[in-house]
Image 1 (cartoon, rainbow, N blue to C red):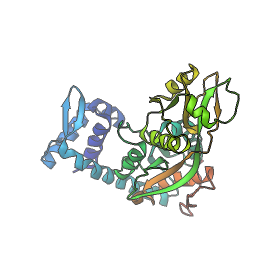
Image 2: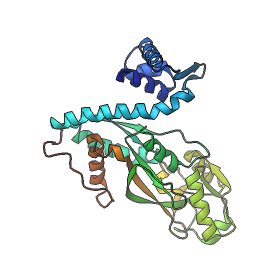
Image 3: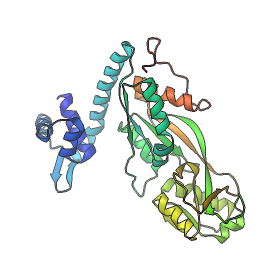
Image 4: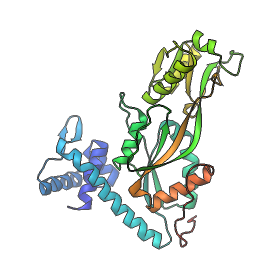
Length: 315
C-alpha cells in the first residue's frame, strides 16, 4: 500500500470525480484511475462505484476512509515536525467553517497567518449539511472523522453533542438579534412584537431549536412561521414586509437597504468555539493556527501555545 494510492483514493472520495481528483493532485486522470485500481487489487475489494453520478465509496470503503485520512495526516505531521526542526512551519491545514465564519473571521486570520507563516497553506472546508442534522453535530463529526484538522463550532444552549476525542475552546459569544424594517421605531423588540409579527428563522436545526426554545420561554404560544435556508432570501422576506427575522448577528453578511438590526426582548446568544481532534493537538500547523487565533481572541479559553524556541516568524 502506497501513500500515493491513498491520496488518489481520498481525492476521488472528496470530489466524487476522477477528473476533479486529478486536477486537485496535479496528475493525469489515468494516473488516478491506475492508482485506485492498484489499491483495490492490493486490498482485494472494490472501493469505488463508478457511474453517471460520478464516483462514490462502496460500503466496504466507508470503514477505510477514516483510517486512510489518519495515515495521510500522520505523514503530514511527520513532514511538519521535520520542517519545525528546521525553524519552519509549513504544510496544509484544513479548517472547517460555516458561512458566517468564512465571511467575517477567516479573511483577517488568513492574512495574519500568511504574514507569520507564508509556507502554511490554509484550506477552508464547509461540509454539506443534512437537513435532519444539526450543524453542531456535523462539525464535530468532521473533526472526529479527521476530515479537517481544526473546525469552528457554534454551540447552542439545548442539545449540545458530546465531543469525544475533540478538544474545544470557547472563543466568544455571538448574540441573536432581530432584523426589522427601517421604519420600526424602537431599538428593542417587545414581547407584543413577537406576538404581532410573523417570525422568520434560518432553516438549520440548531438555530431552529435555539430560537424555538427562546420563544417558548419568552412568548408562550408563539412559534416561527417561516423557515428559510438562504440568509439573503430570509432578509429579503423581511424587506418585503412578511415578518421579522431572528438570527445570529454573525450570520448577517449583508444587510439590505431598508432594514435595521434591533435587540431581542431578553438576551439570547450562541457560543463560537474552535475544536481540534485530540490526536492533532501537537501538530505544528494546528498549533500555529491556534496561536494566531489566540492573538485575535486573547480573552478566549485558548491556551497560550509555543511552537518551539527555534521557530521564528517567517515573513
